[in-house]
Length: 203
Image (tube, rainbow, N blue to C red; front, top):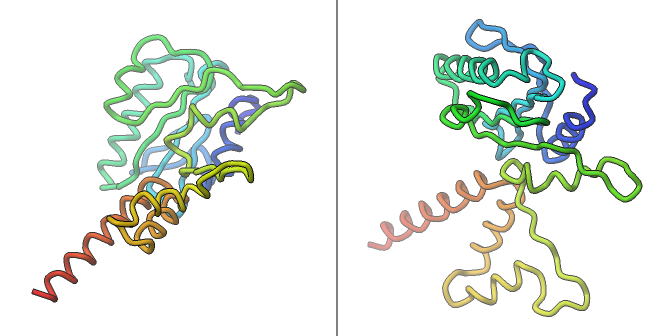
């Protein structure tokens, strides 16, 4: 674990979003890998493997773009060897790394968080990390206030699609949205499969 405030804030936000910390170093295909931090998703994001790399502190060579790229590519090869279905995401926390980092995009999804937002009191504002980490976070649809017209987002969607999609289908998708994009994809696929089976039974 690192005491970096930025890494701690990122880890906290991902923990709140349903990611569990993995012990580091960890072994994959008999090879030991050391990163600043590693997390694994739960439920609809169980195949998400997230690596935290502190580019400012430079532990484990994290301030050297070429070394970071080499370690991530080695882990990617180890995942391939074990036929793992993990989706690899690298979160670069801190200064921009010179050289070699662009190539990471061919191996993993790459996110960059350069600074730690603070609130007016000067305390870390974890919620302001939303934009940088959005792809890892569950979809959140804000509810309208009492003075807003049109009802909730679900009610507005149901109203707009009431002549096209039934309410049960919309509810299934909205419920899945709270668990992330993969859950939505799985829910829609299940609905399509069920519709096709129903159609074949009628034929």
